[in-house]
Image (cartoon, rainbow, N blue to C red):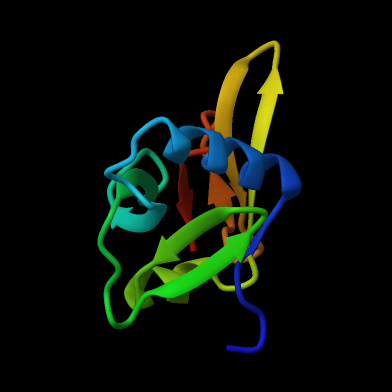
Length: 109
């Protein structure tokens, strides 16, 4: 993969903070599922297990795992953490998405 997924400093800080609160968990798993208002949606889970085919992204004491099927849809994306008047959330800036919903959690390719 020439253009893999990246993680912003803000996202890495937030992931490290969340994982530190739960000693049984070691990483944030990001996956793509069918559904959502635009066709696909992102799912975020705290996990302790890593799959053989996972893409592992490590930055500033944070680990993100993405399974090989989801990586296909997320190629070139950036995972960010936003804290603004609308609230706090992880956002994925996906160059492959041709449409997305207002909530930022679903997209179409």
